[in-house]
Amino acid sequence: MACLVVKAGGRSVFPEWKALFAELMPQLDVRDWYDSALDPTEVTYALVWEPDAGRLAQMPHLKAVLSVAVGVDHITADPNRPRHVPIIRMGGAETAIQMADYVQWAVFSLLREAPRWHTGQQERQWTRRGMPQTRLSTETRVGVMGLGSLGGHVAQRLVQTGFQVSGWARHEKYIEGVTCHTGPEGLPAFLGECDTLVCLLPETAETRGIITYDVLAQLKKPSGFVNVGRGALVVEADLLRALQDETLHGAVLDVFSTEPLPETSPLWGQPGVLITPHVASEASRATRARYVVSVIQALEQGQDVPLRYDAERGY
Ligand code: NDP
Picture 1: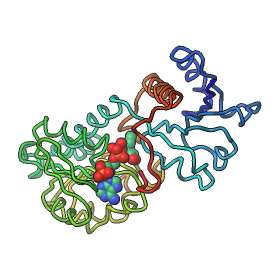
Picture 2 (picture 1 turned 90 degrees about the horizontal axis):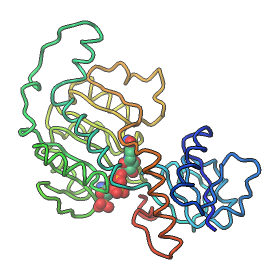
Picture 3 (picture 1 turned 90 degrees about the vertical axis):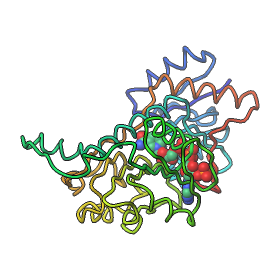
């Protein structure tokens, strides 16, 4: 019988996971990561967020590690993780739809200067200003960095909404209505045509620190920036500089190099910035549990599953 250990969302939510799995897959033996009586030799699957370093390596019969999130950097950060055990990313349509909803909101917020309206409201100021308020969605080109399971869906949604859309990935992509660029050689042309940049890349050795002042300065001026990928993709000091010298007119930021974003971060008070607490895409536990069950069932039947982390490419 498959045995799943769960560390996802804190100790108090384990009973909720257990109840969900009991309904979806009654034969699955579901255990709490924090249970001191847990025998690691019995575990065959682990559903985790930020597993304690070295703990997965103590589970000799582990067949797969399932990430409770789309990103897996919180698992690969463990230098002692068992390298032969596949890591499976969270999937499902709900994740992509939520991400597209968020990005659509963020892009419209920047188009209409919502961050400044928000500041004005807090200060009880009737703030009317600025050229960007007159720009139309149909005149605005949004660039999506990363055209994967989320980025591809986001790009399609932005096309449907009426924006002009460009995309950037490692490999060639054909997405209706999207002008696609690839690789480092395609980056300058991509950046140069965008009014708003949406970063939806995974964090890898190649992408860490990719958003520098130089990159932001290549966008059309003044431009907007949305980060929903990972905080480590952005050099935060460069982002601040670009906001301060009005290379960027605004930014919507959901992810940060340190989370929660420290109270002392200058980003909190930077005009033109909207901050959200890493909530861009949060599928419900029920949806995630359904996905986990589908993965375990496929693996138990010897089938492959699509969202498998590839250590060589880093995502
Ligand atoms: P995928 O792995 O499906 O896609 C990644 C995309 O990035 C691919 O298009 C890939 O190119 C591209 N890419 C990777 N490395 C490079 C590179 N060096 N240069 C150019 N393009 C590159 O990821 P998802 O779309 O599923 O998710 C993206 C990220 O979103 C996650 O890794 C996670 O960090 C973040 N995320 C954030 C959430 C939030 O709430 N804020 C929620 C969920 C995810 P190619 O297609 O050519 O391989």
